[in-house]
Amino acid sequence: MTAPATANALDRDQMAELVARDIPAGSFVNLGIGLPTKVSNHLEPGSGVVLHTENGMLGMGPEAHGDEVDHDLINAGKIPVTELPGASYFHHADSFAMMRGGHLDICVLGAYQVSLGGDLANWHTGRPDDIPAVGGAMDLALGAKETFVMMDLFTRSGEPKLVPSCTYPVTGLACVSRVYTDRAVFLLGDGEVRVRETFGTTFADLQASLPDVELVDATEQA
Amino acid sequence: MTTQFVRDPDAAVAAIPDGASVMIGGFGVAGQPVELIEALVRSGARNLTVVNNNAGNGDEGLAALIAAGRVRRIICSFPRQRDSHHFDARYRAGEIELELVPQGNLAERIRAGGAGIGGFFTPTGYGTLLAEGKETREIDGRQYVFELPLTADFALIKAHRADGMGNLTYRKTARNFGPVMATAARHTIVQVSEVVPTGGIDPEVVVTPGIFVDTVVEVPSAKAAPEEDGQ
Image (cartoon, rainbow over all chains, first blue to last red; front, side, top):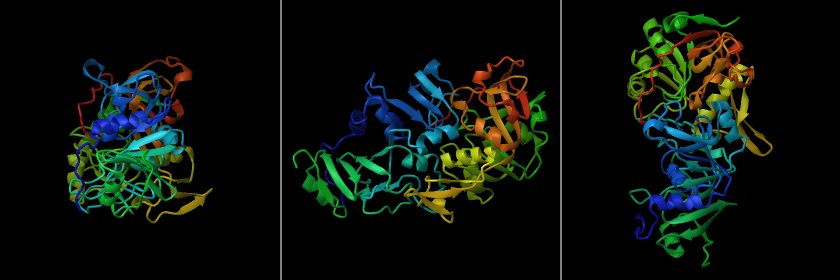
């Protein structure tokens, strides 16, 4: 299988910008390690979005530089960050109570695979020689009212990452509601995969490139 | 028992025997009680079971304890990191046993242990490799996994200030596992940057009440956490 040509596909900053635009003002949001972290660069000042970092903080500010660096103030990726006015600190059990208890509005995560039923695989390749590490991945997957995934639609070797069922070990079942990719935005729910918009491709070409996943055209042109 | 104040980290950890279970606070190096761990390395205690979020970063602290071959078993959520080479080597050599626990389940198991709860049903991990063999239950249409509480013989944690009663405050995200671990160990040992007289901490801002704290040592020159880039 080969991925379609990538002309006019979104780059990573454009994907992050798109996710940021879809986060309602005033939301409590957790951005996962890696690509989702970029979303914070595109949140409008004054949007009132409050960032949660699972190591124990609400109201996380941008990455710290120079004299701002304080090694007691880091994010979940262990990068020094800053605090915004109104920030709060709390211990780990409270931090994960915020997730598990459904108090966060949106969590944005990276993924190896997402199934059409919303199962997420993002913690373990399953290779026997890999040392597994889970961190907060399983908590985050279930830990918000909505879980968004950001990922490329295809692997480097052209395999789709939106799949009928995950072949990698799953992180959580039926937890992903929306998938932002370089080629399209997918809305998951009720057993359907609806395509909200496409980038550098048409719905028909997208469906042709994902023969194992039945898509529903929900683009504006539909 | 009221809180004991000791002179140095070596005196603080002197009672930890071979085979003990030890919770160690910190998320990466933030809140890691490095001087207490260094004292534990010097004490020679071995065959330890360690509970921590990670499995050591770089060459200091928990990484040094692992490198010295003192840890038989580790219960953690995120062992593999860019700078976890000492753990990686011991694990691949089959010299260290790993129990991998999702981070929120780890925190809640410790909280339950300290709160006298006999276990709990959580949705986290349901349907995954980490829930294999565990009891499950459907509650109000949602699937849950049963998790057991975690306690330990000792906890080593780092706080910011202690007063004469052992009441603690923490600094920023260095708080992380400290407050729950303090409750879940039979003997909690705390290193603080500063000891203040009783009454020197506003009771309204105490995070860990002194009842959970057994031993305090002041480490005023606590080293700044080193640079790191792992996750």
